Image (tube, rainbow, N blue to C red; front, side):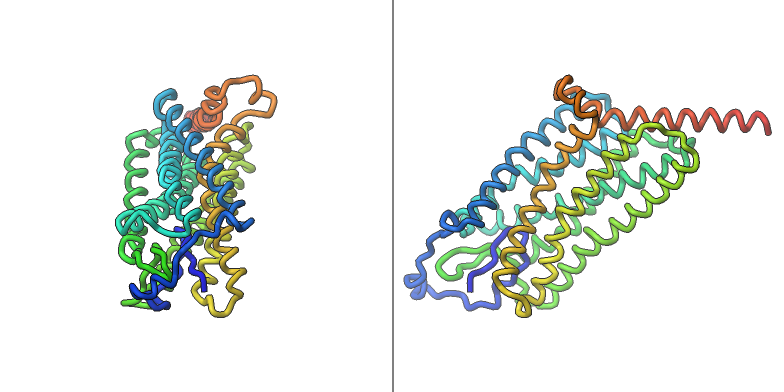
Length: 345
């Protein structure tokens, strides 16, 4: 049976016998990727994801980091862009592995590149949770938020989110391994010493990196919508459209991956070809999230006509800057209302 060697896969190759040196002469590996329609399609998609994600996030980093005034909002989006940029920078390793159907970069890069990709997953969702909580606090406690929301505090929160993302990505460092199988070297998760670790890692990733964060995000958004409908203090919906698009993109890009990774835990019960195809498609959709974010920054910031009339710089400044201006106007109006109310008391 062919093995699942996509970089995100948790498939356990230890179930197979390692090929001896004599048997290696029988199993001469030859890549068949370019002869398969699905593999060629995913290869083209992966190259597009790499190009758009790498240069798109580099553009976001350049504009939000060097061309715009540093604010709490630009701090959030700059960190998100850095996470996606790092992921895209290492994505060629996965593309090479896909084409050659063999891992040629050694044990260290097997562990490191996989860890980087899971750090991207966790940091992205953690940052989306932070942004949602920040919006919720700004709406519920506008006066407090105006006084307490600072770039320094936002930077500390971002650093903590990155440390947490790195910590929960450590299983890739611990269990990732390389071995020769059927005449080729594969990068895989070796759960031989503790078979239960496979289930623990997959379930914990699903809960920490998907279920729990989305529950928090939904609660925050529910509170925001109810509060804004009650007060009707903000006319612009652009900031919430941007955030909603980012959350929706993450949800739809990562959900198929998590579904098939969970199914992989009991792979004997499912059709092998369907499981393999699902894992490949799920992996590609998960990777696509890294280039969708900068696209959403641009195209959700202005209306369609303005996008064609303005420069790329203006688009992205508006996409990220509009949120800060809208929040500021909202907080200022609320503060003035609170002041007038206090004088009457």
